[in-house]
Image 1 (cartoon, rainbow, N blue to C red):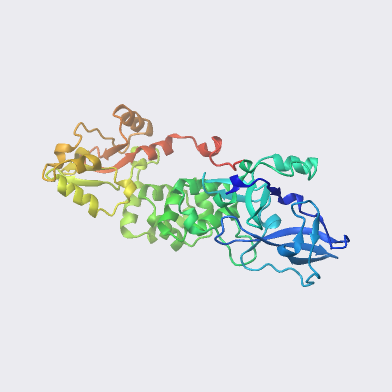
Image 2 (image 1 turned 90 degrees about the horizontal axis):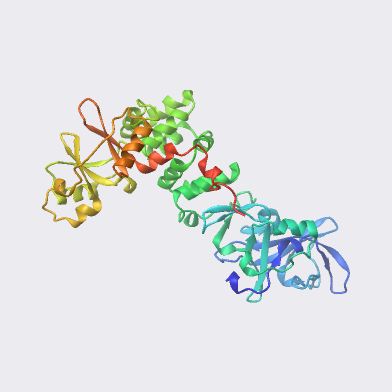
Length: 422
């Protein structure tokens, strides 16, 4: 809708502008404009906060003229002298949005609202976008007439952003979960890392409505932010979160928690998760054993294709862990079948018959470079890990876990993936 608007006006050009009555006498100054958040993609402007003799008063937008002509006028008969009080759902555009962060839901990035853009649509003033660029800063240096009107395509449509409004002292306004949940957990984690602590808390609070999503986001956060948002949680709440994380991610986080809390949180984990984490903690973090996940799907060498597919359907493993089905002979990996190969095969055929049998594996003590060379040489996205003693399979290393280990710490920020977009 923004692209069809001819004239867009800057909020900053209205701020502190004098307002005149019908006779042309100056009666005060415009302190802010008030918009109402709701289901509208472009929130309507419902009024202005006017300062008259040291008092902030509210004037409905229907009684204000001249916003589009540069001379603001009061067109009512009298001013309501009651002090302005914000009502639920109302935002002060300058105080709450200007120069603050918003989430670009299309790109999954933070933007800084250096300017708020307004337009008249269907006879009413609406908030149509924000300008995250440097032009507003130049306008403040060169004066309010610099760039009074701009091309619509130069701004970010307000319908595609979500402001942080947790600081607003009314109505407990928060980012809608349904909007945030459309982003990938890695994108949400990037937002948290870009944001201030208070903004990050607001995001974490919203994703906490879905415990699984919260765990997925925590897995994507860097260690510093993980610890930051665990600090104020009780041991029981921290254990609840770690219980929903992948065992390898939970083990990595456990090792970073202060020693005095570590054992308490570990003891509070559900028995199955606790057993997996304790096993992973016996390996060095930079070895195959430290990188691997103990969660994988396997069937015996005697299984049919139908039995392998039924194992997939019955599995409680996260979808992300169902990379393939490993075929084991007395616990030793002898083949791996992709889900696609199983679906294409006849149900009564042996699962091993559609499996890749030129299988290699890592040992738990292998360092990360040995793992990387093996996965590269054999073109693998998942590598089984088997013990030295008897060759039994104990876990898998996936390519994403390997990349997380190989990429330098802070690489997202170094490559501009965790910075505020302009």
